[in-house]
Length: 397
Image 1: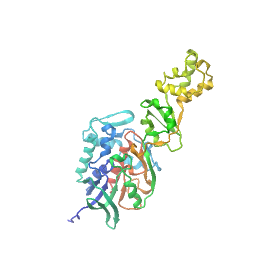
Image 2: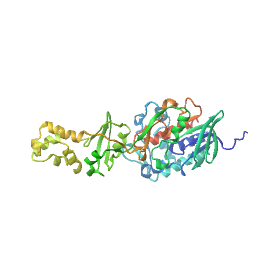
Image 3: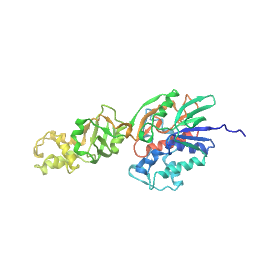
Image 4: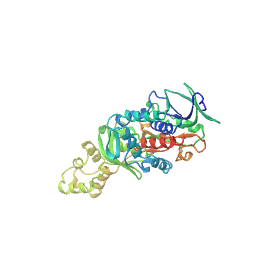
């Protein structure tokens, strides 16, 4: 029987987050010797804080259409090979109680720590080793595999899996380490940017709706042909809430965001009826039947018309409808990585096998999870990507 050299493993995984833990469990249970290296003092920190501490661990309605990538086809193989139902089966196996919120989002009844404990139990089944609080100094490849130099010593692995995420939420220790590693090995990148992030406005725009801070309303928000119907929240910096976080992943500098503040209402028909039946009323008064009072007054203030509805021409009515249904705003940016839930962009998928996640030009090198140019919508999709990509690499690394 051959004796394994000290600090030598079949698979070294950089990052003990969602994707890394999932990969470690699968690889270890295949009989591979696995080492997880994590810079944080505890594994799964993003899992722990997610979903208000209850972890929105997947979404019942996950499909490839819920993901953004320069290559929309890339995610299909992994999502098909390990589905949301497969992850739910694992959760059920560990008798973790959960519930569905809106739009297929699944949350733990208890704590997100249950998901972390489940993943750690899976890694123990495969005898995976873990080192926490590790600073990685360098990563290199030689004829026998990969050499990872750290402040706790040097480790060698036949395969290396990079599961270090992106730079979103830096206070959690997030960094661009995975991107630098990809570039070190000559892989192409898709320029990263903050995703699922609040939008900000300039001083002039903020002055227009400073009185609305803290107000939430159900809206339809669109950029180009992409639209989301969820809640919007006015903030002291601009706009947030699920609808805005969703659309932020599609928004680019210089684009308008179009907000329909009454998505399920025929505002024109309502205004025409009010003009017939209550001609002496003012526009703001009528709009308060459709919108919160502060929002109704702001919309009415953007319409240059006579005081009473009786004197509104059809053209002015159309302007009033547009003020409610097509409010166009132009953000001056986002709140950036500081509050972004995910990072868009990352390792170019043309560099990777969609089946195994191995780099085509560097045998034995794998990239999984958020570090790859695949980003999910809000609502459990990014965790499902972590599980699916982690399993894919774990089966082959």
